[in-house]
Image 1 (cartoon, rainbow, N blue to C red):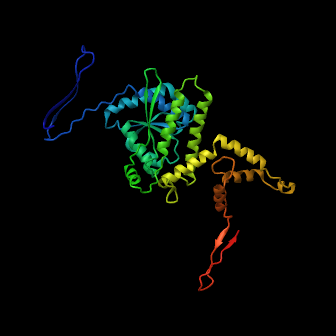
Image 2: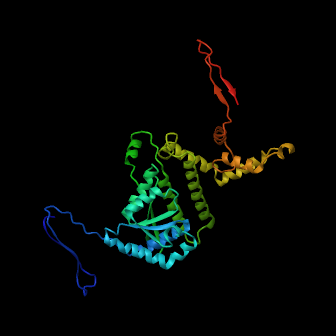
Length: 351
């Protein structure tokens, strides 16, 4: 709009009440952008309960993030969060020792400070509640710190008329258009799919939660066990350098290799496969000489076995055996020699 007078007026639903002038000002510039922003606050109470319950369950310290020093209308968001905390959750957080670093109170962070604290608090142990756009900024920052746009998933939560929660799980919070175009052009990519997988896991677990109590309990339990196993496998793969290259570096896996690796581990750790492995292990149990048995440090031997059994399925396969032997420096080496002008090479295997 151009120069002139601008007035924002609120007309109450109850027409017996007087109209309210929200803002009135003179615009002196020839070109002006005018924005009327509506931020509903009725759902903040539900958000507060959801947030504080999750923080208690995860045993982390809660923080509320706003920019209320500039955007005065955000004050009500902080006030509602604080009221719910004081009335319902403060005692629980105090008993858990989760307010020791905040003077025994719920702490407010200006969004600018929150962006810096996320980088400093490398040990974790905190949760943040914020408006959507501040949340976008903070989660994108975490994704960038971990060098992966697919690191963060995004969940939208609402409520049905009957009080049950509505949850929408987004596949990936960040944008990955460049990698999608590379894939379409046949170029190799290596994108961490954790956000996508976590979204699928969340959708599965919420669907199980929504099932009535009359549903088959064994089936519900099986689905939850599968999602937990899938999450453990993916996290362990990334920690052990079997993640995608955006997280694990040049020696990491491509997107397809990572998916295939996780799929292989899922099959190996399935309940059916474990039963077969128990039978094989029972049949193949070796007979140890008593003199040798007495010298074995069973606890140390068990720890060594666990270090080799990277997928935790109780059986060491060839890949796990090779990786373990390489890690401790006990593996056959190839020695190449060039004895003369003929270029003959002698290969000698040594242990």
